[in-house]
Image (cartoon, rainbow, N blue to C red; front, side, top):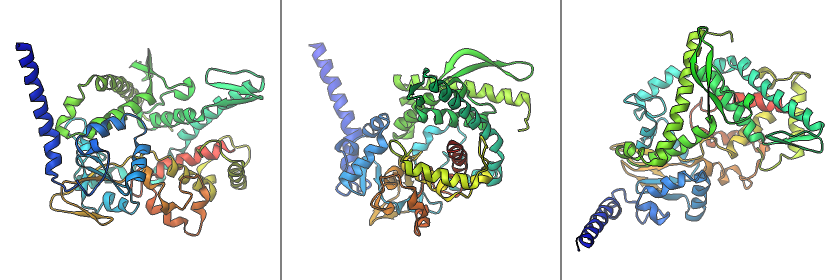
Length: 442
């Protein structure tokens, strides 16, 4: 009898809490969402639906499918409306808009201090951004060229080795031989290149992924008297660790900020935190080694069409001197077709395809596509979806660099947000992509 009574009591408490935390806010509808904005039924009741969605690794595609089903506005959470309107990008994310960064960004904050990414104060953001502006100036970006070219050269050496081996019919761990040619997953190869460049520029030394030819970097236990890192025997998966951490942060960040610390204690979040801790140790030791050493001197969907490759080779051969193993920036910075290919690739494969949430500031309202959002409303614009909207033409889902070379190609810039809005949002990445693609077709 006591057991049955306890079970009944627990059930009543659970039902009461569920009704209080999920049903009552939905019924009160403080932001007037119900009836205005459609979406998955569970999304209007709880953030758990979107949290689970972010862990699938396909949330950008699923959000696009939801917009295809429901229209311009889709409710992704109790207080989160996704807006698939390219014209809303400037309204929501522009520096002069009445929207601030939501509690979502608190999950990326370590301690009481904020940085340029997670601060919600626009004055503070402007001050911090000015400090970083010089780092990402065109002159400084070009100054990275020798180090970037070195990593591209190292990648080319790996590919040359595989091609020579494949010509003799040999295959390896991560490549196969087919008709005397090497066949490999270039997506993974470019990831190795990207993270080695990041490690070099940000930490002082690359992660060594190109050399290892796998997502694994040896942990650093200490540095010797000369400042040279002493590597341990533990291998840290750099790319997968950061990918899991990013997905985990997004899954937790959709909840109110006061719940973040509690949710981090869930088993699956703890395992991700351990991986990040190992990577952080690797990064810290690398920076320590750099300080001790002192300053130094220093895809189209499926296979690309033959026509596309021919155009790239034709453009490259016209401007780039022959026999250069790795191209120089001055030789390729003004190649229209190469620039168009880079932009088109970033449009189709947006690095940040999800809609980063903004909250309408106190005392203000924001009107988008005829719908008004009151103070406290959380809204976002999914760039993965807007990058495939009809403003790009009837072939928005196709990889067609020529769209950027049309007479109206310049008008696309206002909708082009592969990373974020702002004048320096893509300059560094586009510069380094030019190096890579210019060399690839050399």
